[in-house]
Structure formats: C-alpha cells, structure tokens
Length: 136
Ligand code: CO
Image (cartoon, rainbow, N blue to C red; front, side, top):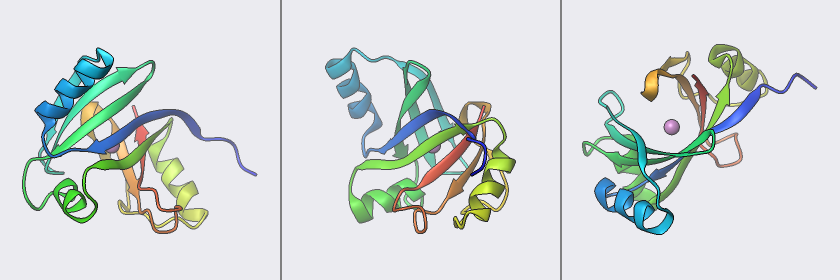
C-alpha cells in the first residue's frame, strides 16, 4: 500500500454538442454560472467550467471535427467523458499509475486548461474510465 495521492475530484468532464445549450441548461436547472471558459486549441475543445465547492463540472464541446471530443460523441453520444483527479504532483502520480499497470495516453505531463499540468490515462486498464491527472 502506497500513500494516497489524490487530493480532490478536480472535475467531471461532460461531452456536449452545443456548449451554449448545455450552459443554459445548467443555469436553468441548477442556477449554475460559468466560472471559467477556455478554448484549448491543442486539444480541439472549448470548456465551460461550473464550480461546485472545490471541484468543477466541465462542459466540453469540440472546436473541430478531428477533436477527441467530436470522435467520442460520434462513437458514444454525449455524456460523461472523463474524470479529473487532482494531485499535488502530476509526474509522480503518472509514474505511480504506470507502475500499477495503467496505460498512459500522455507519456509525460503537459499543460491543461486553467494553467494546470495534466496527463491522461487510457480507460483500457482503468476499469473503463478515462482518467485525467490534474495538478493545479
Ligand atoms: Co479534463
């Protein structure tokens, strides 16, 4: 048994076709306001983050057809896309996950939105869940 390295659920990412419609729905249903909005050009996504306590709901839409989000929606429809686990040290967490048998998508940590450092882990080998390690 190692030391617990997860400090918080950073975000749950929901893939949506129409970001404006999703934002409006969350506003109408929950009174939720967007806390942060960002286009991540390298990933081909636009994110709208709704803050819930110290975590976020990340509504995510594709900005181009070859974006991973566009492909996911094409394959599986809209819905839960990945879970972001917050860690203090993304590189150490990635190393620990790989040592535990996980299949990394990112071989090394890279920049994410909000100035974070992130690394993705493949759902295959992680019980069907795409995992993102997020260091703030
Ligand atoms: Co994410």
